[in-house]
Length: 385
Ligand SMILES: [Zn+2]
Image 1: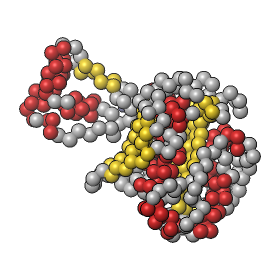
Image 2: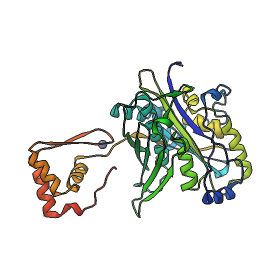
Image 3: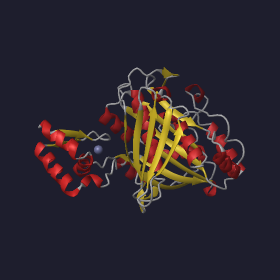
Image 4: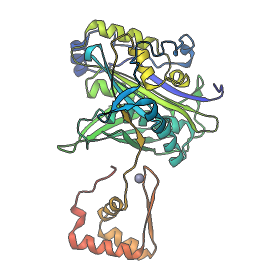
């Protein structure tokens, strides 16, 4: 493995820090153990663990798995689908778990946004989490958007994911080149700074659900752990990692989310805790080339791990000329008129994928006429996906 590779990884073995609601959840699940320290796994610790050892012991021998309801040979399937999420349970449903490999989507985001390494790491982490959280959504057409705003040089980032494993995102300032490193890792926490994490879930039916937490560290995994504990009352362990090559491309990206379900016994919590303690570094797991299945095997292999299904994940933006047109219409007749008066075509770029949409003066005139005729400014404008 390349020694000079920049590392960016982080994991929280802990949750809590939650207040009353969390207390309730903890009481239900267990009253100790998952409380207290926040273990951000440091590179120094990882040397003690030989992460690749547990291998596939006890996993399913068959390479066949159900994907989208169809029995599929995974060996063949993976050749075409590099990024994917594995969904699993353990301890008879007391634990639910997700693990993902996301190198391609993280690299695609880097290429689109030309991000510096620390921004690549931050965006890769949040997109990896977003991909896993997206498939937790109940409705097929539900969407989830996570926004981090911080006082650090990155300023913030936004990631949107859907229930089908599709995810997109951008950082507000992709050009943070002088970010400090500590312990050989990219310092995502300081690049993001202090601020908030907002999660909005848009359901196809019903009102959007929005929840906000203060950032704990800006390292993203810990902040998401806090989000799960305080907003969803689900004790969770989140691990996210992005390895950036010396040439700034993404070498590896991935992560896991492990969650305790209601009714989880003390014994299960103890065993999970003991197991998570051995996982010192998500980066190390990725560096060792562990697949999502092997990561889950490593954490939950002795806890009746049951792999449920595999969901492909990808960078995907659904912007279209139609949507951009709606955005233009939403700015109102006055601004449209101003653009027309300037006598030049207008170019709008999608924040998420960078695709450019150009509108000629004549097209703007047509839009203005439409806006006036139909009072389109009152229509609902769908931003994002
Ligand atoms: Zn787009």
